[in-house]
Length: 513
Image 1 (cartoon, one colour):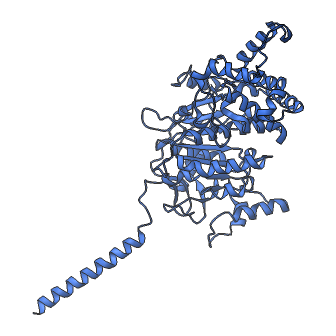
Image 2: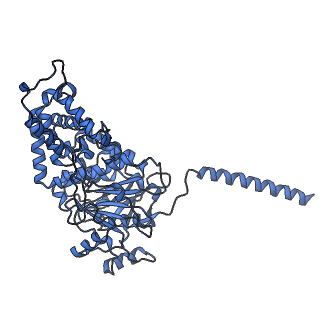
C-alpha cells in the first residue's frame, strides 16, 4: 500500500511539473527561433544583428573620423558572408578594398586580442563596381521616363508651378507612348508642350512659358554638372544588384561616389530612384529569414535637405513599406537629427559612434542622440557619447521579438577585408572580370521622343501652308488630337497608350519599354 501511494504521489508530482513546464514554455513562445546572429561588436558580451531583423532598417551615426566607415565595412562583410547582397556608395573612395582579403596589421591584431575573437581570418568579398561616369565601374543609368517627374523636379530644384508643368509634359508623353530616355528627349517634349500650349490647356491645363524656360535652364545646369550621364540606356536592371557568387556569398555592389557627391542632389536623387524602383519592382514577402538586399545610404542628410513636404511624405512611406519587400535600408550620417523623426523611428538597429560637444548646439545634439536609445541604467548615455574612442560605439540591436536591445558600450569587431583601396589597375581588372562586363559599357540610342518629334516637325515644315490645303469644313481634329492618334498607332502595339506611375513617380513595376 505504501509503495502504491508513493507511486501515485510521484505521478502527481510529475504531472504538476509537466503542467508548470508547459506554462513556462507558453510564456516564452513569443520569442521565435532565429538563425545565428551576425557578430558586430563586443561589450561585456558579443552583440549580434539578427538576420531576420536586418530588414527593419538601421542607423550608423557619428562625427567624422570616429569609425562609421569601418562599421559599414563590417556589416557589409557579414551580410555578404550569409548570402545577402549589399549596395553601398563609396563616398570617400576607400571601400574598394572589400574585394581583397586583409593582411596582418598591428592595430587589427591588437583589436582581435582585446576582444578575444576566435578563429579570426582575413577574407575579401565578391564585389561589383559601379560608376555614373563609367570610369571606376560599370555605368549606372536611369531613363527619364523611369525616374519620373517627382524626382526630376527635386533634381532640377523646381518650384510648385514649374513641377506642375514638368508633370504635364510627362503626362502628354505617357498618354501618347512617347519614350523619354535621355535629356534630349525631355527637351524635345518640353519644346513641343510649349509650342502647343493653347491646344493642350483644354485637356491638360495651363502651360506657363516661363516655367518651360526655367525647366530648360535647369536641364542645361544639370548637363554642366555631368548629370546627363545619369540618363539613357541600357538603364540599370536592379536584379543585377541582387546576386550571389558561386559559393553563395552576397555580392557587394560599390558605387563610386567621391566625384558624384560634388553634385549632392544628383547623388541623393539617384539613390532615391534606386530605392523607389526596388519598392515598385519587388513582391511582398513579409518578414524573411534574411533580407534580399541591404542598401546603405551614406551621407543620408543629403536625402532630406531642402526636400518638399510632398516628396518627404512619400520617402517616409517607401522606407516604412520596403521592409516587407525584403530590403533593409541603413542610413549613414553624422547625427540622428539628420534623419526626420518619422524615419528615425523605423531604424531599429543602431550604432552610434562618438559625437563632439564643443558648443551649446553640439550639446543639444548629444542629448537628443542619447534619447533615441533604450536606456541602460549602467550608462550615462549623453556623457558616454562624447567619450567614445575611435572604433567604439553605443550599440543597440533588435531582439527576436523586434524589441530594441538595451544600449551597450562596445568596440566594433575588426574587418576582415583589406583596409587600403585597390590600385587603379586592380580595380579595372575587377571590372573586366565582372559577369556583367560589356552589358552597360556601350550606350544605346533607340528611337524615342526626340526622334519622333523631330521627324514630325520636319514633316510640318515641308507641308504646304494651311491656307493652301483643302480640309473638310466639319473637321475639328486639332494638332494635339491628330498627333496623339498618329503616335498611338505608330507605337501602341509596342508601348501601350498609358504608363502607370508608382509612389515616387517612377514607372510602376519598373517595366522596361
